[in-house]
Image (cartoon, rainbow, N blue to C red):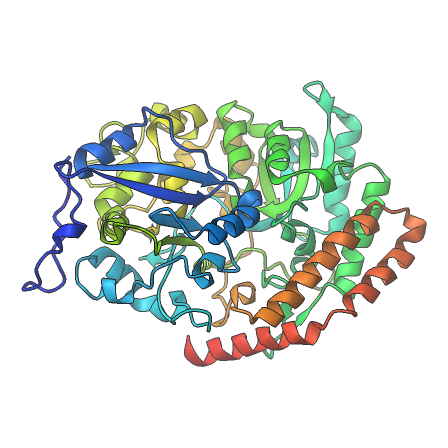
Length: 541
């Protein structure tokens, strides 16, 4: 498998030999990756391929999302960083803390053509525009820079998820015009009939409230009101943003949760679970439902699929308040603050950047996403990628993946989302026919019960064009506005568990205490910053 030669952008520009990756001049790159994925097994075949073809050995530091806050602080204080930093930090602390190199001039050299092409059309959106460090490009987003058409079989966005066995037991009910009451009734009815799951207590509804994942508890009111996911605000038809935490759309949701908690449907452990414990509990198959984003519990889904427990995996539902239309599914948003950057302390920044550039070539993107041609997939006479049942089974097996894929690395790498130049989708799960073929007999039968749907995205609202400014949650905030936003988050984390777990008779009192706490925060500072960001994007994006 020979690597494609990558010409420089300018034919008369000399190749930068210091950026060359070759087995004759082996390189070890240290890599920080914030991810829920595990580091690869020692005998991983792609690890071996990197060494054999490029002379690159990766030394991983895997940081789980719920440990990222503390770890970033310690690392910044030390001032020494890995060569490459794959960060998921929306607060951009590595960037603003001076840990990352500004990459604009390096990209202009012509030595990194894949990265240069990748950022060309979206460089304003990807670039840092604050005041803490020089304006420019520091991070290559890890998801949703699309090449060609957007395709997909899996739904990764927000939803009220429900186990398929619940819907099967209910006779595959109509899922349109879903309400919170209907959603919880389905769960309640099933739990009453099946109080145990494989010898363990069945959990009706789980609430994700762990540090850094509070949005699992705080975001639902906006979606229930028919707003897309703009984080802590709802943006009206005049492009004006305001918080909803203190509005009736929130009060109505938490009142329902309070009632469901009182009835025993909400897990009593919800507010003490770490993120790892939360995903581990989902992986047991005991949890009937939760609000979350599909990407956030991928490891639990893979674990259940690997064990052949498809009836315990989840399908997305879209409850809304009366009069609202569901707007859960949006066009995937570019993760402009999340992805890979090169550290200022790297002794080999050109090689580090060349590694990212090489991984973004179509050849390596196919290796990382599809695997090895002939081993992990086939190329038909028509050029279309397909897989055998055995290859599809391997793809779902966590143990196999640890030996044959680099999931942690790929999670943070920039990607060819969409389609390759040969028309194949970026990943097997995005290739429509291939996605359907990957489904278990159980899932194919499940989809047949719902009008012969072919993808999980088919269960969601038709995806409209995103508003030009969208989304508001990744608008860069000033320190003061960030502090207010954190105060609002802290206020929610301190009060919502008390409201949800309190006696129903105390709901109004507890809710008023929450409102009083919110109104002590200078909310206008935060709202003004978000609105300024929306105005700026409408003018410049």
